[in-house]
Amino acid sequence: MYQVLIAEDEYIEREAMKHIIKREFQDEYEMIEAENGLEAVELAKSHNPDIIFLDIKMPGCSGLEAASRIRESLPNARIVFITAYDYFDYAKEAISLQVDEFMLKPVDIGEVKKYLTKAAAEIKKQESDKTENEEITVKFAMIKKQYQDEFMRLVNIRNSSEEIMNYYFEIMGIRMKHACVALIDFSMVGQMKSESVMQREFIKGRFLDKIKKQSERLDLVAMCGELSDQICCVWVTENEEDLVQKVRQVTNIALQTTGTKPIIRISEETSEIGKLPELLFDLKKAHSDKQGVEQKRYPFELEDRLLADIKKKEFESAKKQLELLVSYFEQMYIGNEFRREALGLYTVVKRMMERNMPELFMKDMEEMAEEMYSSLEMRAVFNNLFDYASQCNEKRPDRNLLLIQEVCRYLEKHYNEEISLEEAASVIGFSSFYFTKLMKEYLNMSYVDYITHLRIEKAKQLMQETTLSLKEIGQEVGYQNSNYFTRVFKRTEGITPSQYKQDFVKSTTNK
Image (cartoon, rainbow, N blue to C red; front, top):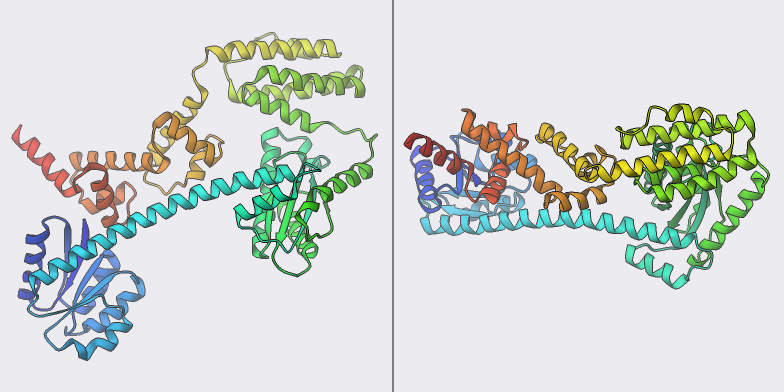
């Protein structure tokens, strides 16, 4: 349903226009009336009509003045001037106000019908184009992220093909005059060592987000690798300015605003894309030499991989990561020190498993963990734990299904709020890309379609159980614009809200 505002000071003229529209278009148009220009301006602001018929000569505020004020708040509204005078006198002002049409009094039925039919088709196409463009934007962002991730993996391979790397830049639409790489090492950051793997990932992600936002402000393209203790970043610019100086500015702001202090090493600039892997290799080597091969450092990257396997319930793979950690513990720790570090790892693993599989943990597991003084005892505790978790996992319902159900319960309570796809995905800790995939797999609909389904079903319930107006119902379920609510309802149900309400009233009356 589209909304039409008729602004005419003569009652008979207004009624004639309403009669024409009602007779020719039935319930396709909702009509609002204004007796003068000032009232037209206020109604236009409060109702946001799609089409506005304005009589040029009205007392207090002319149609020309009203159109000028309406254009300030509704630049895309379709305005039609109605006049009993020669409209050529107003042509110049009408052009400046972007008026769609002139109609002479008394209005011609065929002219009104022709105009409204054309306007409805244009509005429908604009809405369809807008929806399509929004979907394309979301899909393009996800595809671009995938290409960036693949490109960063190429940068980490020393002998990557320059031709393939250029191909990725062409696909992503990146033009390069200069580029440089940086190595960001979080392994020695004090605050990270006492945090869980998820908290460490959050800290790293927040730091990289700050880098990307600051880079955009300086017209730099910034791409970062996967979250780990050592993260590679690439900066690209089309300009001739000093790139390294700008990158230092970006990283300094990230250091100051996040309070995180990783070690950052930045390469020299290059104008050849094929040199990026070599620059990164040199950075890593220099960084390793600087830190010292004999330095005693806890292998957080191994712990991260172990916890990632546990999170995915890949317990056989977790056992392999455990073997690497056991080997490290054997070389570095003995006696009470070994037990302390093994217990620390057990605590981190326990928290991860309690979060993902709360029904786990045998009563005697804690006592066994207290006795981990050697690699033999450490293997026995963790392998028993992984075997037990694996057996329980085989009996558990599909966890992804449970997570989707959790999101659905959340959205059922908050469906009338403006919740983005990313915010909904964050409820269960998923990326928007993976969350979208799960919605399609388990619900056979997109996130937007599911929100629409919830809102329309609630709107139908409110129409059946309350005396709220259709506008109030639309606002109650999350549609502030009544026109948009009507269009979504009709697209979903095949009839307008008013038709649905009428049909329901008739069905209950006949019982």
